[in-house]
Image (cartoon, rainbow, N blue to C red):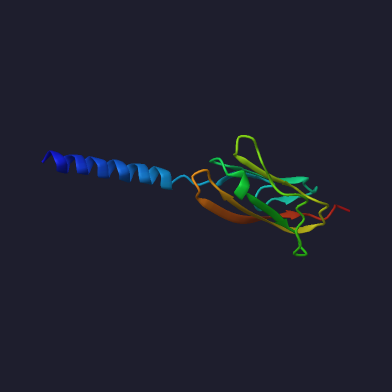
Length: 124
């Protein structure tokens, strides 16, 4: 009887720990520019803040312009605390821009996504 009780407790503990570890992924909590935002001035960079630290080695961030070409000037940077991913941008023309990101959380789970923002033509 005692052995079966220990087995049940160990099994339950392993299941609870497994659920906690499996839930640890990095998802965006804030984007600048924001998803769907229309801007009237070109941003110098795209910045994404995550809810869990990300691995610098596996972080990807690219911005694709209206012509289908990348406007990302340099490889993305991860902040010292591991929560923020950013990339500097080149000169932008009016149009729709697609931000594509892929990160790996410190627990090795990969997440990826994309969103769009719009750079409006200058007011005349």
